[in-house]
Image: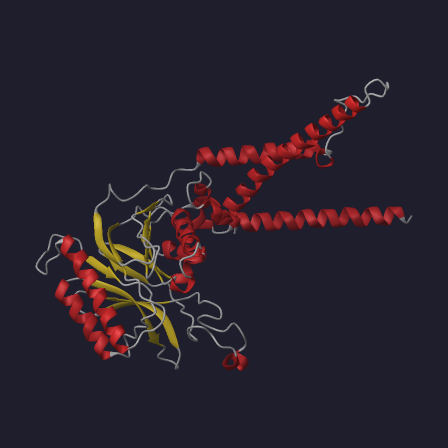
Length: 411
């Protein structure tokens, strides 16, 4: 959507809390149209003016002079009264929105901290992994986490600190928690040793068939699995083949043939609760809306953009998180393999971003929200539907008038 162009440093971003990215797209187009019409009118007038002035200079002494200011209106402005009515109406609507919109919360500084989060950006390469490299990189996860935990001064006997969660991003390491007892022991020992929760990405089997889910798993400080979210929005041709099951085997995918998740499971972060978006899911505003409607105080995005290379797509993916934060009035914590790992607050401001394609860690806090829901969370894509309905009505009117005009011409 065009609205994503306004994700960074734009006064239009706040409209997302009312009508989502489509309202921001609409406002962007309207403002651009206004500026274009002004520029077009000026170019039309001054272009004709200087052409006539040049002709008069060439025809000097021939008594053939052209009136400089008798310039017809541009064709596009022939029905200017309708344009004026439309633009004045839109200006009043946007002005009302601008001054009536309450600003989203600017952060959690004034609230009690419910949990601390250690976010890892391990910068795992996308290819060339063998068993030895895999084990070394897994241990590197531990080293990064332990360095960050030392800064927090987390001790197993500490009772007055909020709980801490270490988050591993989605990565090409392809953890399989349920099927890998050695990995279970690895996570369990790490959680117990450091008295932390661990949230990580894993391929988890469906108990009903041989398929797998792309899942997020949470383990508590006792080493027990306490939560699982299965990715609901899969990547077409990356995680599943969007074709009939009869020809599925003939259409290859890049990663595997995963199964859709169905449940909007929330994870505990102290007194707060969080919804998980796995990679591509940050594109779907309906998912973050549903999480918040079910009580999410924060949104966690676990993603691996290593497939994309060091390209502008990294920033474009970050723009999705910015909109999800503003739409829902909830912070988004992006935990990525190669970048951009960052904290996005409720106003869409990006803080503490890690440099892409570097090893890094970030420590953030999570607080329980005030529970308020934005217009967008409550009513979803109402603006997009309204525009669709109005467009159909206008097209129907035009078709009806054209039909009547044709009928009258044949009489």
